[in-house]
Length: 164
Image 1 (tube, one colour):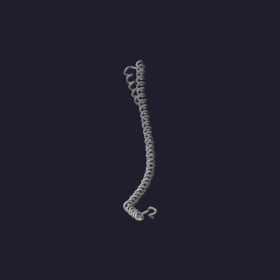
Image 2 (cartoon, one colour; image 1 turned 180 degrees about the vertical axis):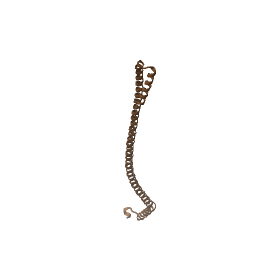
Image 3 (cartoon, one colour; image 1 turned 45 degrees about the vertical axis):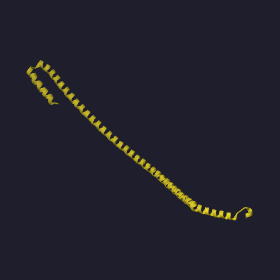
Image 4 (cartoon, one colour; image 1 turned 135 degrees about the vertical axis):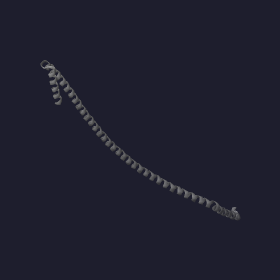
């Protein structure tokens, strides 16, 4: 081997040095490095699991939000229907009250008209009686004395008043 330029002691020393270097690298570098890689792998797996859990939670939350929105819409529709029904009832009540009030006003107007008619009728009767008395006085003044005229007039007026 020496002919080839290889020194056996040197080759053996290099082999031993290589083995020592391998042992040192394995003990102080490879084991901590592998432990660090395992730790990192575990944290990545945990992060992936956490991400899946969060994605599932988000999906569940979105589904729940959709359900809550549907329920809210249903409840809002119910409230709107109730409000519409209440408005219809109130409208009907207001119309009924207005009809009653207009009936009362019309009835009162009829009563007032009848009352005014009666008053006018009474005034007309009084005017007719006065005119009749005046005409009778004129006619009687030519035929009867004043005392007789007075007595006849009073009797006639009493009869007319009683005849009401």
